[in-house]
Length: 396
Image 1 (tube, one colour):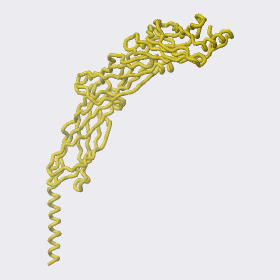
Image 2 (tube, one colour):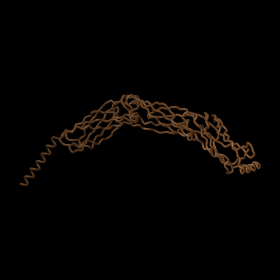
Image 3 (cartoon, one colour):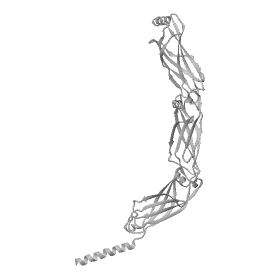
Image 4 (cartoon, helix red, strand yellow):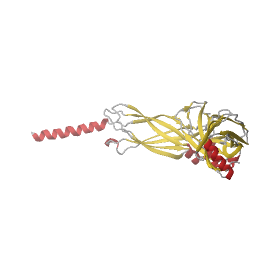
């Protein structure tokens, strides 16, 4: 009886397997569409929408998809997609297959497309399902069509604005204008820029926006540039003795798409201050002396000396401290002498000075303080320069 039972069980299992094989149906695949997802200057992102139908009463593993994109009947790019999520019984599943076209490679391979608005293509799919019933089966699928090629964006310079300047640095804002000539959105391109003075690069960089430019629209971005005069004078020797130099701002987004704008740069030179010496004005119980500083203004505009604070030590004795009066205007491209008159009446200092003057001996001086120059041109901040001089000189 046991033997008969096992025989019946084996026959039942075998017949069940036959029935199962008899009702297993092939999955169905079809192309829905190929959609443009994103357009950038160097890249075109597509998604092939494939519909997969599982007509069976049991779930199936997700398919393995090998794909290849042909341009003008020539293989161009290929790839694979593994769908990890199973397809449920009698489910219709939409699968998106990403196709990334590098436009640089495309135009390098198909030079005739540089002036074309579209090209013929087709996508070939080879699909397998990792189940025993279909382990030796490949399901092939093709979709031909015409691919609209994006027109390159139009790049142009916008306004140049001076944001800030003083005697050490200046900051500029350059506007970059990008026009999308296509009838679909494109990604704002990555912009590489370079700011040059007399053809020498002072600073460069790039920025990459994540926003899209709508179809037929224009978008702009501002690029801030900060440059020190010290860097300019170090890198461009000819700039040290002139009032103006040429500068340019260039930017590009690849594929030889770019623009350049020239901007004359008025240089601002820090005034040079020199201690010129001491002269005696009158002698007696009160001695009067004149101290002289020279200010060399190498700019093509006048400077207004707003304040001159000084502190004067001679032979380690403090002679005077205060604020100079009757300050002159420092003319453009000129040297101007700033005098300070000091009266000395302290007996020990007088006695020492008489001896020094009789012998014609030098004195040791230590002058400290600062000069403040008020802005005379729009946007120029006030400048304060320390005035510190140590040395030895004869009183004339």
